[in-house]
Image 1 (cartoon, rainbow, N blue to C red):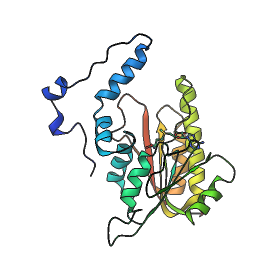
Image 2 (cartoon, protein in one colour):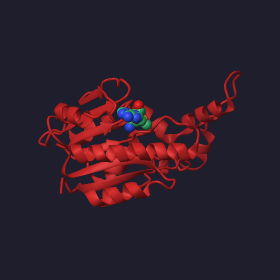
Image 3 (cartoon, protein in one colour):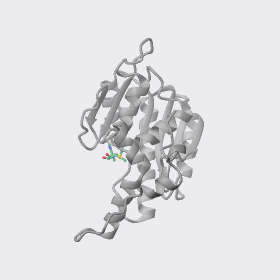
Image 4 (cartoon, rainbow, N blue to C red):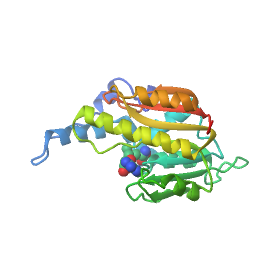
Length: 240
Ligand SMILES: C[S@@+](CC[C@H](N)C(=O)[O-])C[C@H]1O[C@@H](n2cnc3c(N)ncnc32)[C@H](O)[C@@H]1O
């Protein structure tokens, strides 16, 4: 089970005393100074560094999986928008892609991204825009068949305009859902990042037709000041 880094050994006076303050340097914008300060004081960033994860995002999928248990040994997983690879690292461990859990089934992990990903032991990674027409065919070929889990932490490049960003991520998410319908095995799970902001109703409706259960979750690792949350749809009904 993923531990919350703000857990009992980390509270109160001690934590306040350890807070890192960053001085504004010449040439650095105030917003960059604030970002740096937040990074340096973020317990999930510290934990990711200590535990060898490529980013704090790893804890979001760990916490979602602790709750819904879709990354089981033997599962075949597709990670859309996988760079820099934190979710891949988590999936490799949980589905036993390296065969480290003896006696348990060995899973498969495949990630795709617009960017090159530094190799993650136990995972395949390909440069691919999942929106390409034949992306689903390519993924099934690389995977050697269908998947048990399609997960997406994708974000479109920010425009700085809240409503535009919201609509863009919802469009990305809806396309990811259609991709999942082509790639998932019956009974499979779809996990995707969404932004709260008004346009998520259509996606919910679509997923409710295709899956037996649809949940909306904000894992503790998701920053409270961010409007992101995750949709977890389980029990894919297949082509019916
Ligand atoms: C927030 S990052 C993912 C972080 C990742 N979950 C991790 O733990 O390292 C979002 C990624 O989505 C990718 N992305 C956005 N649109 C995409 C697309 N159409 N096809 C493939 N990847 C895409 C971006 O390149 C970016 O690397």
